[in-house]
Amino acid sequence: MNRHPQLSSPAPGRPGDSCVMVIFGATGNLTQLKLLPALYNLARAKLLSPKFALIGTSFEPQDEGLFRERMVKAVKNYSDQELDQGEFDQETLDWIAERIYFIAGDVRDPEFYAALKARCAEVRKIHEIEDNHFYYLATLPSLFGEIIRQLGEAGMASEEGGHWRRVIIEKPFGYDLASAQELNTDIKKVLRERQIYRIDHYLGKETVQNILVMRFANSIFEPVWNRRYIDHVQITAAESVGVGQRGPYYEDAGAVRDMVPHHLFQLLSLTTMEPPVSFGADAVRDEQAKVLRAVQIPSPEDVLSKMARGQYGEGKVAGEAVPGYRQEAHVAPESGTETFVAMKLMIDNWRWADVPFYLRTGKRMSARSTEIVIQFRRAPLILFRNTAIEQLTTNRLVIHIQPKEGISLQFGAKVPGPVMKLGAVKMDFDYSDYFGSTPDTGYERLLLDCMIGDATLFQRADMVEAGWSIIQPALDVWKALPPRSFPNYAAGSWGPQEADELLERDGRQWINLT
Ligand SMILES: NC(=O)c1ccc[n+]([C@@H]2O[C@H](COP(=O)([O-])OP(=O)(O)OC[C@H]3O[C@@H](n4cnc5c(N)ncnc54)[C@H](OP(=O)(O)O)[C@@H]3O)[C@@H](O)[C@H]2O)c1
Image 1 (cartoon, rainbow, N blue to C red):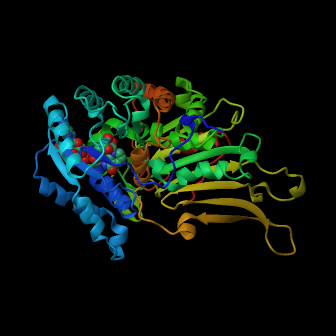
Image 2: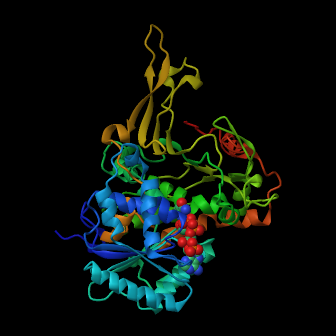
Image 3: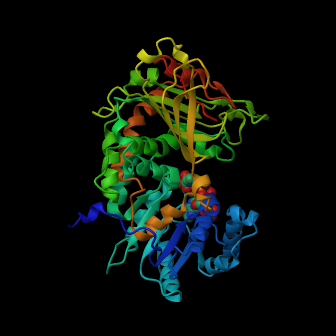
């Protein structure tokens, strides 16, 4: 029996193809904090092809040797797990260092691409690398469209002779619905959808990938995964840190753009999608896109009644006094940027009709925790007529995404003793207890997937646009009605009163697990 080719994914566990990886923005934060440590981890696991090289690019010129040293330092500084245990693998580091090259230039300048093209050819020759290229856009989002256009004009994006050209595009993909659509239109003039890898590093996390496995490789969850048994779902992505040095970016973006269309909606779609016909990239993404399109687009009235925004004031996090958002570096003293958002969404399909989905994300919250809580309905009460309602437990499945990675299930049990008293007990599965922990930045799997041509964990154009469509009304209404009450939550709390009221109106409350 043959499968449709577009529905099956490449064999897992094989090393990446022979290729040259070009990082645009290689002197930036992301490259040093995540990409280089991830490449090191892949090399250690023998998942990079022996015929691989990296060319870093940036605006400011610098010596290639110094750049190489900087990258090696980044690996050492940010792959800290092994360093702590004194197990740093010098051989792997030397192997990577031998394959690092650098070229500076302005990505808006066509001459830069001629030089880059020539450099790619030289590097390919030195390491006998196939003519495959993988471009990572780790630079300012305003440059994404321009870089792809220039790659196209320089003849660096077309796939010929069985060789591939792939582009990883960092988030945020667009600033709103119109700009995301425009960017999609522009880049599709140069690239086919299968060459485009819109990255969301949340999808590199084991637990996120495990949502699919948990739901579809087990037979016990799916029968109850619907409106008949589930009362509501909560998705929380809380950070205890503030905006730090990212003020210039964050002032313009805010919590909605920074977190919702990418991270939160990925979690939402994986939790709510229908079973795909295979784990192939298009099969999975078809279902994700479908469920995102089934989310009711909020009306302006819904924005006012079913969404809440907030900004942190000063407060205490882990016992330490911290400044408010408006006192952070590069933040306007009267800033109206939201650092918190909560919303209630409904999905218009047979599986989820009438089940509310409550989503929230914020900075400077009480704890760092990303979790999906599936709250099941209460059991029929007849047997426990004499038990106070607040003592009756409900089943709750929690998917912990960070910092802890695991799954826990809460259910009711009888407290031992002569009287019928109920208590809530928990079964916990912790990833690290079962499988140990391996050094992981979250980017390893995604870089490897790009090198083997598996786009399952990357966002497709229709998914991105469906996500922006859902939050566009909030962007419009909140732009027209600047907030009057900011700051409206203390750093170190669980967000503003309005977010609590959102659930209280439905007779529910946020579940703060940590
Ligand atoms: N930082 C993170 O942890 C993180 C996490 C998730 C996603 N991201 C995303 O990753 C991307 C990069 O973020 P980042 O924090 O690494 O940025 P960054 O630290 O500001 O670095 C920007 C890089 O782009 C280069 N650059 C800027 N203008 C250029 C031009 N005209 N021509 C050539 N190069 C130019 C800079 O080179 P010079 O240094 O020479 O100016 C620098 O290497 C963004 O889309 C961001 O949203 C970042």
